[in-house]
Image (cartoon, rainbow, N blue to C red; front, side, top):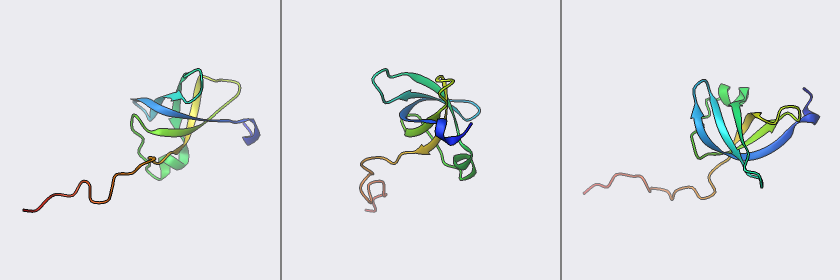
Length: 89
C-alpha cells in the first residue's frame, strides 16, 4: 500500500490484547473501536503502550476495522519533578 492512501487518525487505547494487539477507540464523533498492532519502529525501539494511552494510527481505506499504531502521544501534563521521590526523615 502506498503512503498516499493512508488515513491518519488519533485514538485512545481501550484494551491490551496478546501478541502486541490493541483495541483503540477513535477520537471522532462515532467513537468507533478498531483492532490495531504496533508498527516496526515502535517495536524496534521498545516503546511500551498501555491502556489509556493516546496514540496516532494509520488505517487503510479498504479495511476500517484494523489499523497500525505509529506514534504514542505524550501526556499533556506530565507529573511535577520529584513527585514520586521517597521522603527521608
